[in-house]
Amino acid sequence: MNQQAMPGVSAMSLYVPRFRVPLNEWCEWTGNNWDKVRAVVGHSFRVCGEHENVYTMAANAALRLILQNDIDPRQVGFLGLGTESSTDNAAGAVIVRGMLDRALEGLGLPRLSRNLEVPEFKHACLGGIYGLKTALRYVAFDGRDRLAIVVSADVAEYERGSSGEQTQGAGAVAMLVESRPRLFEVDLFHAGSASDYRGPDFRKPFARHFTEGYASKTKRVSDFPVFSGEYSTYSYIDETVHAVEAMLSRLDVSAGSYYRSVKSLFFHRPYHLMPVRAMSFLYVRGLARGDHHQDELQELCAEAKIDVADVMREASSAPDLFAHVLSGNIQIDPYAATSAVAAVLRKRQGFRELLLAKMSLGGEVTRSLGNLYSAALPAWIAAGLEEGATKSEQLAGANMVAVGYGSGDAAESIPISPVEGYEAAARRIDTKKALDFAIDLTKEQYEHLHDHRELPGVDYAPQSEFVISRVGTAYESAFQDLGIEYYDYVR
Image (tube, rainbow, N blue to C red; front, side, top):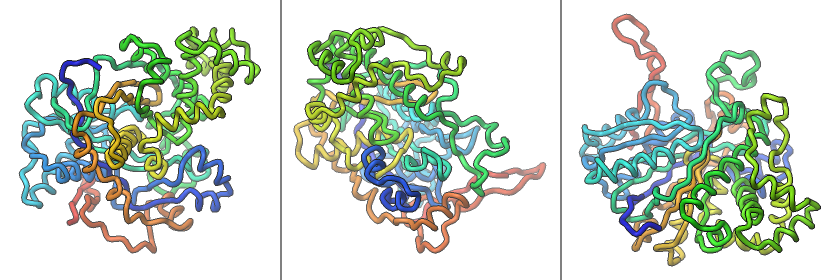
């Protein structure tokens, strides 16, 4: 890491809705294989109640951050929102700002500074990381004497019966960013970026709402994406590889030595197995690029019945995935040989032990969250650092990496490192508080909430959280608020 002082994150907080769908029970309802779902996806996912949306979750996480860390709202000069689930195409973080101001005032605290930047960042699941990078630049330059807050918040929802249903989720993570961080530093000097246009990878075109057949079984306004299964996986792997390799180049370090020395690997996590699949691919690609253990590559290729030359060729290739779409070959894996060898690698005990050492911190918590889109990576980092502090692990100064991804697509690979005394800030994250008192939904309750945005038969009264109080209906020449949500903070 660069020796000069670097900005970073001083505090984090997590908010998830109370309503939970245990995946073992979901498998019973739908006839899916629980052993497979548990291994590939996780344990459960959260869903929004009828009283909440992406803005209420973002505000809940931000208020929790302020209260748990005694932040002076008047010192905050930047409030960024990273999301792909916003319901207003004109305003973004300023909505969250308005909710926070009224709640803070009601709690006898000052409002946020009037001199506050309020941007929203959108790029699928990468919006929060782009927001974090902007906040880091803010506190490093014109906002060096101020504080910044970035909130990653999203609602991941899919049609019932679709292949994405078990990967749903909802939640928000708020981060306090400072020029002298108290949780972890972020090394933007050596970060790797990558992007390429992928066409119909994972998208939310507005026109889908007016297309016959879209979400025909769902009797409410929905935000289900259009996505392309394995093609989305190819895009994830290809882009994260380019971002990680760009970072390694800037660090001037080989893949082999980096993977051995790095303490923890945090990836964007749409489901449990995806980071594992990406890491195995990266490892094999490092072997093929001559970075480490050539004998191991020979052994793996032999076991996979793959020619070493094919893996070597793929390591230096630059496939155009969108061209595959245009030619009608969307199902063709551009790295078929490398993928086959990586599948063999994942079965090896030595690699499993490597993953356990590098990717276990915070892993159990993430399995219970579901996919949080832009909040998935920050949530894993928060859970990992809190677990490290709880177990009194000596993480200060340790090299870690955060790999973000957003479909469409783009990726970021960013070195991070816990600072001395990180434990105090990590313990205040308190993921247990965020996850406690979950309400497990029955099959009927889940289906009704999913399809109708109503939850009859559940005795739940919101407390210490933001709620949608009403939605405007006025559409007159003198005043209009049609479709605009109004919010309250319920104490």
